[in-house]
Length: 476
Image (cartoon, rainbow, N blue to C red):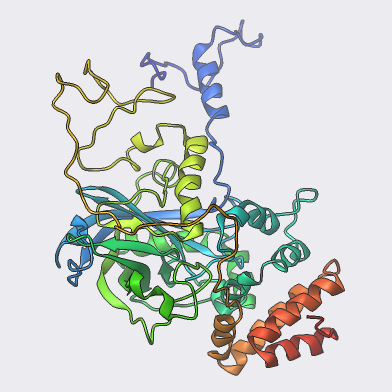
């Protein structure tokens, strides 16, 4: 036993006092160091995705897509890349139950030979809002009431009544899928539209899909109450125990692609994060498999300090003009700098495994040893040079500065199709959950009427059921 500075500690049980029962002395450096360190053990929790569990493994390419991308880690079948994956709930605090109705985060960090690639998604293919300008307000509405610290339906219903684009996301959240059985039995989606670029510079829009080989399973409301009451960390335990037993979770990676020259052929905007790309016209293309075969060694170091950012990409992958993705590119890195410090990418779990170098240095908690005398670029005295140029999307952009909503909103078609794809008993559970939410005493008649009108535009029979059970006529 030693102090942080390496001095031996001969007694870690008793404080240094004047006599057996006297006051504690300020000179007991080990006591002060121990308490001061303990007082600072907790770092700020994530604003969203605070509750999570991580595991390590590998991604293996199974199908050749080198005609679509020059990304090195996708260069050929058989290529394996080490990964770390973090699953999470979204809205609630770090110690909250894993059985709450909430989206689940599904974030994958690929440690490639060309640097890290963070694919940061959820278990639903769509999102609540399409413009990051609304994101802080959206989270505020979903979080507990700032006065009482209680999550309340009326606040959620009020905010999203102004945003009918959220209907598609709610068709997933209030469905049976809203409470996954555990992390192993759920889909994952990149959610945002990215771009793939091949060696010739040809770009394609792309959506990423993770499909679990063990299938998708959910908890119905009564089951969730029972499971959560017995163990509020059931999904974390299931993931850890499964890997420890050699029952390694596996997902298949698929992509959908659209040629940007063809984006006007659809009745939706391919960059609209509230829309899916119909698989009957844009089929899933297999790419590879993700296997988690190793538990993390330390929860704090490899889960709490694990940091993802959609801005972290590799050659052959690029951002689209998806408005939500464009804001996530800034926001994720910014929140990690606040939470972990400006040098968070030096932490072993976040650092690339390949050789890397730049002149970003010093700052809080820098621990990279550097002995060079030239910390600027360019220099005739230092061998550091630019990397080889790689293709980025060649698209030419024109337009005037403006703050506007996209032209192809089409907010109601896909939610209605989603609802009609379910069996009658599943539809009934969905209706009951919405009746319960809209029965909040503080949900005004106006708010309820708006929601009934929205769901009526998605599916007439659904709107009629809600109106009948709530005894409210839609006003829109």
